Image 1: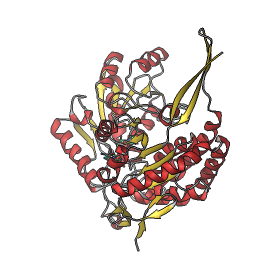
Image 2: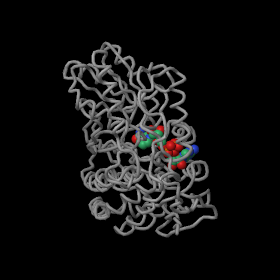
Image 3: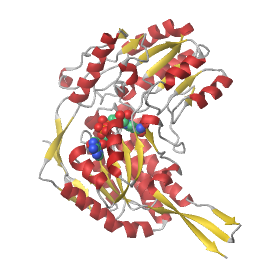
Length: 477
Ligand code: NAD
């Protein structure tokens, strides 16, 4: 029997006249029917968050921290169930949800529970006989809008700093992966966080997302999603504060002096984990001419050995794509790559999966080599397991290709040459550069992108910029 999922508004479960279905992307089965919010539910959720704001903002940071730590503990204690729910709803393989992503969600609350208590401003004495000091004050009601690719982790990455810094929130999860966010709402209440501080709305972007971000009582927007939607939101947001975490087409650059085996491992991980449905995916793999042919052969051989199938099987590496529409998009790019003249060295078809998975959205890991960076498959974010391997000969050429994109989220650099590391880390247009490493997150890092990958940074004290107003107080003496 399918369940029915409702909104959480002011601490109560609330239904809507409209509903939609959330589908298991591995099987095509309906997992639940979900209430679909419109203007009325948005108004109610924002009103609940606004009413809860004064009390929550006045709650001592230490007490907010205690409640958020408890929430982190509840998540940590529920990892197996949350991981399974996430895997069923969005297709992320259980090896990732159980070992990495759900535990990271608990870490997010533990980390920001502490950070809020260490929050401090600046003081300085001015020549005019004033002592100036900065108060970081919560902004009020925040809209937190999330995508489907890493739903629970992203939801908590936004919720933790937002609440820790004294704001209240209305979260709008993706219509494609609503289940764990709904569970987050229950855990927030179980932790003892007052009703109305955290509200969850389900629904589509145009019916629930748009009225939420346009609502006059929403003071800040933390958005993670595509660049196209980010652009629409920025236009509609007016003078609200916002942080935009958007798409990417990150370069993964391997020089001939790199630790070859480690670079190969990391290149595989950065494009095939979560089936390439990852904003920081190393989707353009730039390989030095001297190791190019060997790399293409080894990379294709490794791609062929990745286990594709049931995401609930702990040995599976590649699960399904999120939806039929996304499958159409990714397979469309696989056809386009061949028309554009890239060399298909592995994949391109549909993998053979078990009978119970036949209704899922399956695509083989697919490898294109001899890609020209001007091809559309190298310029567009495919958001699937479809890397483009590109040959380069010099450092200058690698930088030029790396930067020849509208995006600038992450970048990866593999070389043993320290001077080159320093030069390229400066020259690459991206919010993040990982050297001789895949993407390894530390919660103190500023996270975010440049160019079409977004604006603003989240994490550590960078989150103050999104979720607080810096007020200066000048005292004459
Ligand atoms: P999307 O932009 O289609 O949707 C994201 C969210 O916005 C969903 O909840 C959706 O319902 C909502 N939405 C859609 N239109 C809206 C509107 N007009 N107003 C308000 N809300 C609206 O993105 P997606 O397909 O869910 O996610 C994939 C994208 O997210 C990729 O581009 C990926 O790179 C990006 N992403 C970025 C990061 C990052 O941190 N930079 C992390 C994860 C995913």
